[in-house]
Image (cartoon, rainbow, N blue to C red; front, side, top):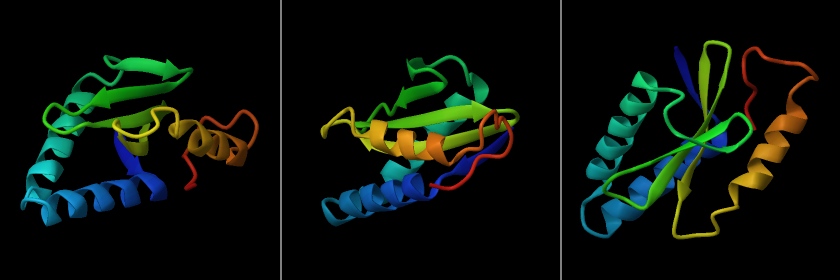
Amino acid sequence: MKVRFLDGAQVDMEVAANFYEERGNLGSAFLAELQAAMDRILQYPLGWAEIDPGLRRCQLNRFPYGILYEIRGDTLSVVQVLDLRRDPKSWRSRLKKRRQALPEGDAGEPHHD
């Protein structure tokens, strides 16, 4: 399965890693935890809670973050790396924009936000 981090998710990941690096040299630990969660997702892609039709969330163990992702064809798209201490519904606006950008009936390669 191919993995694609959408632009916003990539920014989320970098901002979080920088935050933890500046506040205790934990940036590498955050990225390692994120990779461990991605490994779990890839091993069991349908094994995580579906929070919206087609959208799943896998929570990190050590940090208060979740990975929001969807699967289209053979591609797993990370939509957001979500700070769970903030508004838990903030993902809705990003997902709405993404879905509006997809051509009707598109089940193929995801588009960037």
